Length: 162
Image (cartoon, rainbow, N blue to C red; front, side, top):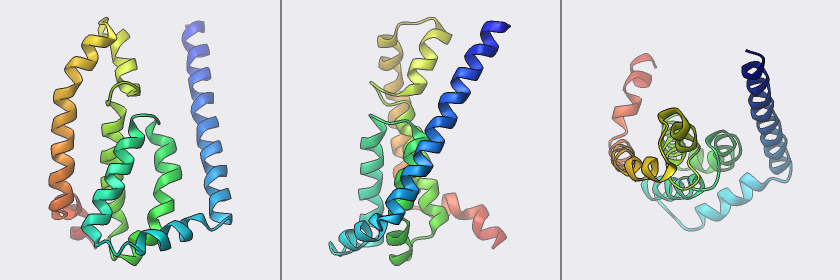
């Protein structure tokens, strides 16, 4: 039990350090007005809402290869929020898409943290876990595309209570 408590404390401390660092970083970039500059830059491309969402999804999926989901959500999402509002995209819908993208990043080889957690639990080699993850990865990408092109699916309950 002592080892489990110690390991839990280490992992919890690591997560809180990441959250605090990401929060400080987001405050710093907000102070520098980086979100507004990026928003103006993105708007200069004259992308429609769908093209913008697909570009952000591609960015988040690419970042999912390297980063964990919590820092991506805390740091990247606020950067594009002014642009989302400017394009008339519902921020809740934007958040739903971002969460799906980060979930995909969690199982994307080689850095997918959930794969590294699954290997010792399943008592399998990482290579076998990665090989089997591609089916789930494909299903999640397909679900992301369906949700992107049919926004009524994730927004059903939100619109029901508005």
